[in-house]
Length: 151
Image 1 (cartoon, rainbow, N blue to C red):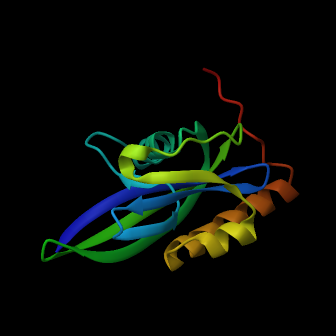
Image 2: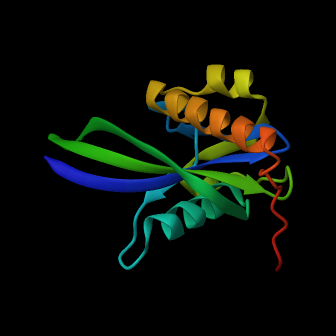
Image 3: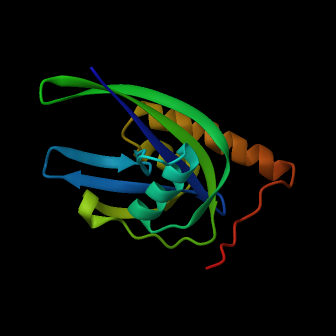
C-alpha cells in the first residue's frame, strides 16, 4: 500500500463554484475539483493554493479549512491510499484556464446544484456540499468577502 497526500480547493466567486473537466486518453473523463500532491517543504495550504493556480490559472485565497476526504485506487499492481485536505477559497474573477498538460480540457464556475451533479466522485460532492454551507453561513453573517489579489 502506498500512502499519498493531496490538497485542493473549493473556489467560490459570487456564489459559483470552480470545476475542471479532465479527459485522459479515453481512460478517465469527468468533472473534478482542483487538487494535487504535496511537494517537499510545502504546507497543505501552500499546496492547495499552488494546485488551484496551476490547474485553473486562478489566484485564489484561502478562507478556511473544510475537511478531508479519503479514497483508494490501484496503480501498477499496488493500491494507493490517498488523503485530500480541502480548503474553502475565494477568487477575484470568473477567469480560469484549464491546464492542458494535466489533461484538463475545460474549466468554469457553476451554480451549486450544477456543480454537485457535474462532479464525478461522491467524496468531492460531499466536500462541495460542506464548503457551500460554510460559504452561505459566512455570507449570512456578512463575513464573506470576495478576494481582490494584488499582483
